[in-house]
Length: 251
Image 1: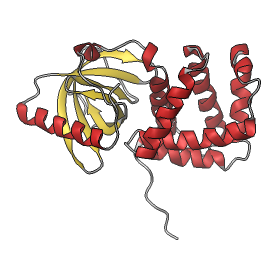
Image 2: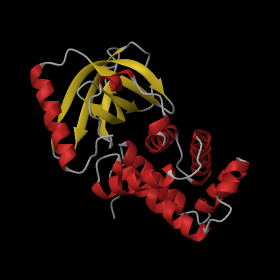
Image 3: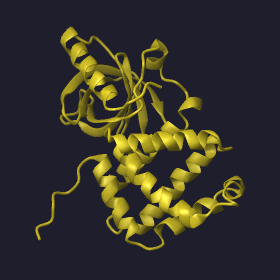
């Protein structure tokens, strides 16, 4: 059978890598062993956990959360459920950093095709999940102070600095008429002009000019849109309306 095309988006690269990791029977067990050893607080949080059930939930949650980044309704619902569940638990921001670091280290051990591109995809997807989990306590970018409604899910797309010939694939979250947050590898100096292309299934791409206004951990930066012509503003409004109709929720 002829192999299919190589995945190119962060979501598809991540899911392909996750499948290779899961081919190793002890991938999830190895992750939890590392995560629990990372902190006494983490170990105490999980002291009464049914790990067989937890391991099944982790696999499903990672897969659906990755799909949420491109607007899959079931994935959006799963990620929102995890946000609400974790909000009731005594979880500090440091624990999310340890979770991300433990997942990355374990995937690096278990994926036989690990590469810089695969690592970037894991950081992008897991970074998006961590930001969703910690959004209530995270620093707010300047574009959010405009009080425009934000959409919870992320879009696919690219970003490009004027010095770059090609766009860099990325996840684009928190989209509103004033700006967005981008999760991607690559340089993003504050103050730099930037071109952002928003893409979503079933919608025409929207290309907007902006400027980098802040950086976020991990692999994220905020963009404020500038000098948006009326026709582009109308295209953005149409895209946001379509996303809300699919189930995206205002934060």
